[in-house]
Image (cartoon, rainbow over all chains, first blue to last red; front, side, top):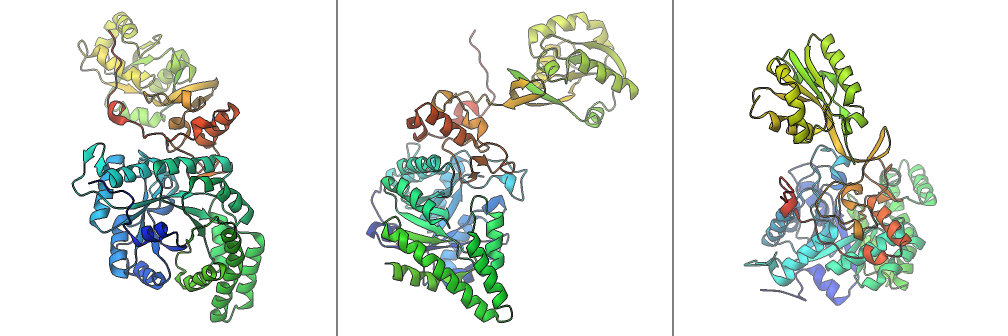
Length: 313
Length: 221
């Protein structure tokens, strides 16, 4: 039976109510043992609506994201947003996975293109990209809303909410903004953005995509240490950490060299001080529906983020 | 249009010709000649190298187009006697040449193996000799009327129908260290220039592989 305008998850419920949402991110690694990730999931669970579970980011092979999502949901009692890329499975395989996800109790999926295998640690692998991030959204919506796939009835159809990504840092920006229009046509129910640090650019981009009326969860990356900030700045293409921020983080590293506890507190506070005005400004302009915090392995920052969200309301 | 070929490493050619002695060289006078992998020059160079390794060259021919069965039927008639004394054919052409020769010789000389001395790279656009670029993959369902004449299947490293992807930075593609242009940004810029961004905003369905995902043929008579 076709199922439209329904709520299938906590995330779906918050989106429907228009509540401000905080989501986190979990990055399972090249392992079959998820205990470390489950630990992080438990730590962030009280603060977030849901957490994304990544799908071999940078094309580096990790444990399958659907399996990881299922186990994390079960073990950490935290709702997840299953990240699914079109990089390595064709349309037929993906349709089967979507039904599999439903059977495993997964009710949110983020549609992503995925980094090309050439970038990762199995570069000889065949790049599939049978679908793209927009047509994957369309496929999910077809299966969920009509209960059919390619015109064929699905006996017990999946019930998932599907989101898509956006990159406010993209240049040329209009090329990216218009692409979000295609994702809107495809039926994306929420957007999670790439990490941003540039407020003006973010305002320009979010203003440009506002007409598509898709709730936007802004991607932020609170930096746990100077090394992480520097690494992010160096290794993530297209995203730069502002120089003054790098300077500040370097200062914290030097100042609290011998007192790790104080150093941690200083980093947390510095993140709070950077993100508070940033988020305040965007909320004031009614450009945000939530925050997606991508700072993996930094779950202790979540109480501070909740504080930021409360103070910017 | 040219089918772009490059030379195989000579050691790889030698390895393929292992256990053979008498070689006939068939070197294409068309695309491979242009790519300097075949033609008269390519054949001469290969013959000298093989002779230096102790091979005997039974004959060298440079057909106009090795991929054309009709041409090969005619040209093979002229070297019929040499073929009787040949262990293997080494083809300096694209992969189509090997297919064409194998099919043409199937009845009379099914025992002669046909090897290739090149790698077939792509169907290419020529800027000048020595500069060839892939601009079309021959997918069988041309999109160019909707994409400002720039093919996303070819110029996007992921062949996306709805790009650009998140791997685009400042108009460049994540594949190849951000040196090549992102195909979808090229399309965006061209359509903008033409005042046709309406085409850019269109959501496109995935490629239909039902007809093109297997051996293709065009037979109209």
